[in-house]
Structure formats: C-alpha cells, structure tokens
Image (tube, rainbow over all chains, first blue to last red; front, top):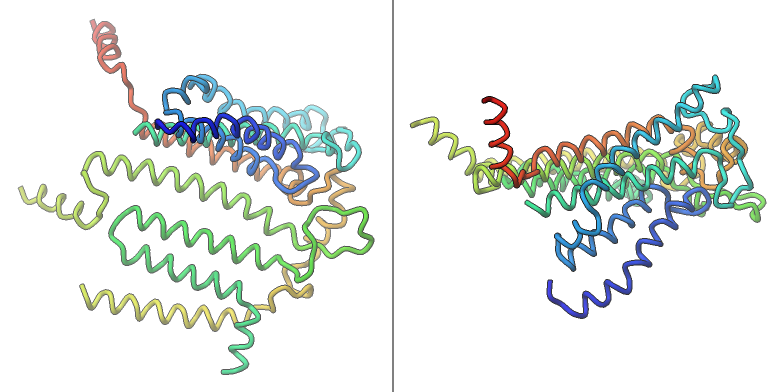
Length: 139
Length: 127
Length: 106
C-alpha cells in the first residue's frame, strides 16, 4: 500500500497497540481481559503492520523461525509448568497446592502460577494468529 | 397467547439467539457457495455464545471481578463466560481450517460454488 | 428448485415456532433464582480469592480450576495452525528439493 497518511499513523499507533496487548495479558489476574484477548491484540498490531507495509516487510520483522519457536514452545511451556505440581507430589497443574505464593491480590504477580501461564498462552495465541494471517495472505 | 408473548418478551436474549440460529441454519441449507455456508456456521456459533452468556446474567449484577470496597455485591455467573472463552477459540480454529480448505478447493476447481463443482465432477465421470 | 425453497421456508417457520415455545418455557432472564446460579458458581464466587489468589474470577476458572481444559484448548489452536500451514504452504525452492531427491536416489 502506498498511502502516506496510513503509514505515518500506523507508525505512531503501533507501539502503543503492542504495549496495550501486553498490558492486557499481564493484568488478566486483576482486570477484564486475559491471555486470549491480549494475545489477539498483540497479533493485531503485527497484522496491521504487515497489511499497511506489505507482507515482505512483516516477514522481515517477524521471521518464520521466531513464529515457529514461539508457537511450539507456548504449549510446551504450559505443560512444563504443570509438571512442577507432579514433581512436588500434588496433581498436575496444581497452583497454590504446589506451594506457589498467592501474593497480594490485585498486584501484577498475584495468584502464584497464573501470570506465568497467562504470559505463555498470550504469546502462543499471538503467534498462532500471525501465522494464520501470513499463511492465508500468502496464498 | 398473551401470557406466552409476555414470557417471550421477558426472555428476549434467548429469542434473539434462537432467531439468529434459524438464520444460520437457513444460510447453511439454502446457499450453495461454500463461503456463505461458513458464514452461516459462524452465525450459529455466535448465537450459542449469546445464549450461554445471557443465561449467566443477573439483572443489576456486577462484573465477576472481586470488589473489596463493595460489602455485599451481586456478581453475575462467571462460569458461562469462562466456558465460552474455550468455545470462541475452537470457533476460530474451525474457521481458519475451513478457510484453508476453501482456498485449496478454489485452487483446484476455480470456483467455490458447490453446485458447479458437482456438475464438473459429473462431466468428468461421464467421460 | 422453487418447491425446495418453499419447503425449506416452511421447515424454518416450524423451527421458529418451536424456538418461541421453548423460549417461553425458559426461566426468566436475569433473575437471581435461576437454576444456572447453583452451588458451582457460588463456590467459584466465594472461594476464588481464597483458593487461587486472583481477583478476576474468569481468569481463576480458566487458568486454575480448569487449567487442564485450557491446555488442550491451546493444543486445538496449535493443531489448527499446523493444519492450515500444511494445506497452504508453498515450497518456493521446488527445483532444489527435486535435485536433492535425485541425488539421494542416485
């Protein structure tokens, strides 16, 4: 796309969009939103970038190797965090039972395991959405 | 008849979900274009979400986030929202996979109309 | 073709009548005494902070009480992404891979 106004506006808006997505992901424990909504906002920032600036440019800032790694290790990260419970002798994916500190409610890292899981799922959803968009757009 | 209508008017979100579901079923049944069938399936999915989330609502209830300042709050049911989060993700996956299949179909036949694809197959078989 | 469309519309009208009848029999919308608000949701509302340490109850359900569910949900998304990539990915270096196969066979 050769539109000057769109390119300038996207260049200004894009960092805030991406940061807002991570804000929604990290504050899923104390405010509306969470991993899925935040992940889709992060993915949307990359999708807007590659729609306006062209698919090749999007591929350049987010190469396929990064997508493959984040996509496959999001699920593995979830499973590995769940295994902590098994090593401590409590059920799979146990949270407070496994000895994690609940923290002060409402703060950023409250709820023991939950912020870590949220971060993993959010990054996974974002990379999956970007992969789907790139693959279908390339066709 | 008046009693029935009053009950229906009280339950207006369920009625909206039902009408949307009927629209989705009609779209899937009457259109022969695959894209329109997919849109119909998506309409049906979203009306199921509407039905579940509105079933968990309480009039005048708060958002299901604990409010320590409020001494005796009434929260809406958080369970349907959590279940529908799963449903939305499954719907996104189904839509993406169906779009990929439709693109493959278009690449090999040159059309997304099921009726014309059937005619093409019939002609190939006749030869 | 016309008879088929008329038939479909008649079927849809019958289904709509059934929907209206069943909507009238549903418990009233927005009332706190509905059977949906049973002991399960009360447990989630009253014990979520104590058992998970999280203010947002939906997050508590999705990532703690039903974390196993969420794990397989992410796997569903992963599988969909893999299926789309397998279906649509074009291999641009087709000639070079064909050469490699030839060299392997030889």
